[in-house]
Image (cartoon, rainbow, N blue to C red; front, side, top):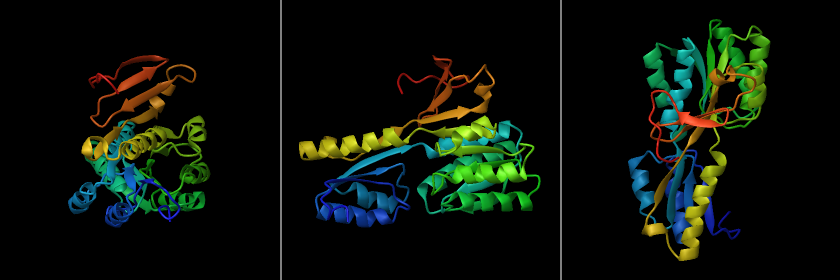
Length: 276
């Protein structure tokens, strides 16, 4: 439909790798430049087909593996042992990598996932899932929202926690800055939040595609993989004065700079990169 409507560049966030084979064929047949946003291509056979297309400009993707590890590590450092997982279908490369990072942190801190729900789309779906998590696991410590289909998943999660966990024992670690995040911070529900990749990724894909259109071919005659830095904010820095400005910038390599009250300095234990 997009090609029929006259689009000469397309940015796609695929639900799985397999669908990209058809996309590559359609775009090549119609001479439309395209790119993949927010998702890595994990299937080697699909990757070979896609990268062989002269109209595929590349990917712009965050480090989901590192993000998943950081999110659940924060839960482990807070003493959590039993967590509920909200994620996408396992066929999603985003879910696969963020859960792979999660598993590393689970092993390191002796935690376990005691309940999970996938492909939730509405706030009501999340509320129902979290309710079932708590009913089945009264000793639940936290909710890890690895990825979701709907932007209002956090609203539903908070709604259920306010009803079934009035003492504020259960905390949330979330990837992607979803609707309702500010309210969750105000109610002291957030252990770790990571996101801020929507606009940078779209800009990167758009630049690759526009360059190809304007110059009659891809940059350097090849597809490019552009890394996107994940920005995080956690509750630790909120204790450092009234409403402190505190962010981590986590590029794919894992190095970071931390902003504290407007001053950048290297994060403890991690080397500062030359550039982000």
